[in-house]
Image (cartoon, rainbow, N blue to C red; front, side):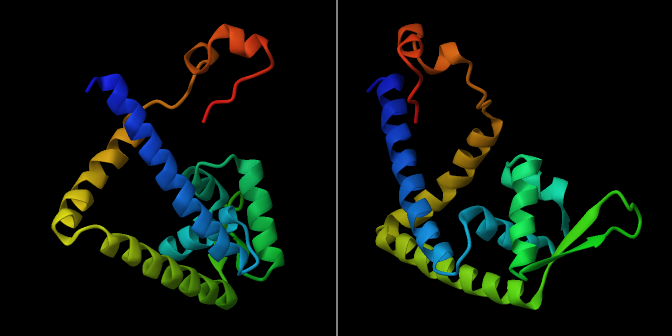
Length: 167
């Protein structure tokens, strides 16, 4: 099998994994009345206890305006609080409220059960292999430049006909 064939197979598998797990996360988050971005924001704040808007933007790979709207909605829902940083008044610290902490516990519990089911559906003798390979995948994704030039994404003829439909 060629590297091109392997890359196509790899892309398809990763794409399907992302879609399948993302769909579940949407269902779990929407039942709590929040978006995926809000769900991930709450979980990240919970892990760190306190983050700034810039830190959240960086962690979640979202632009600052999107992150600001996400946090505004979480504040309005009573799930997070903003407080002016005591050492540098230009920054706002974002922390969970009691209601936000309670929601994160539910989200984490649901996700843990879901991923346990996924893990247990992998044959026992292959689980360690899968688990040991995932950090390599994450490192490769982090180390790979994802900024596509238009010429890398689609051929010029497709772009001229009305756009690019890359996945």
